[in-house]
Length: 85
Image: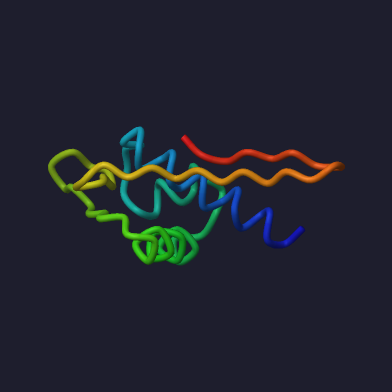
C-alpha cells in the first residue's frame, strides 16, 4: 500500500497545481500535510512525466505552463481505484 499513498500524494500535488493553490512552497506543503522537500519531490516526479511546472511569484502559486493531465486507474476483481483531475 506504500505505492498507493505515493500515488495519492502525487494526485494531491497535481490538483493543488491545477487549481492554483496559493502560498509559498512551505505553506502549500503544510496545507497538503507534507514536508516542503516532499512537495518538491512530487513536483519533480510530475516533471519526469512531462509536466512543465513553475512557481509564479506574481500569482503566489505553482502552475502548469502548458496543459497537463494526470490520470491513473487501477482495476482488479477486488479493487477499483481512480486518481486524477
